[in-house]
Amino acid sequence: MSDDESAESEAVDTDWQQLWHRLHESLGRKWTFHVLRLLSERDVGFNEMKRELDGITAKTLSRRLRELRCRGFVERHVEATPPSTRYSLTEQGHTFVGALRELESLVTVVGCDDSRRDACAVVTRERPTTAVAAGECC
Image (spheres, helix red, strand yellow):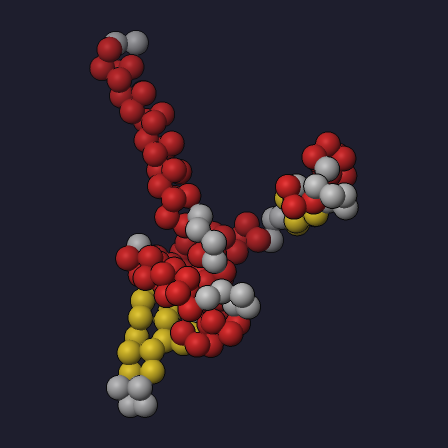
């Protein structure tokens, strides 16, 4: 392998790592996936969203919506009469959430029964795998 090919191979190896790091950094914040999931069902106003996402603060919801708008996943619609603001997914947002919804059908979350259950949740789809993983992790 030439030096150029080696350098190109290293760049490709680190590119995926940087991509995944940025993806986590951008979307791994608390409530981000909840907001996206809710918007995948319908367009929603701010207060309605806050009510449905039990436990989210107005400040956090406002931040997440702003972040998702900046990343091109969510758009904001303001109506003059009557005054209202609604949020919806962009085409890119629908594509991304579609992929997440497919993942949703592939997994089951199984919590642990002992005192360490907050530290351990097993995500799997197959019962034998779940039993083994729960025994090892919990």
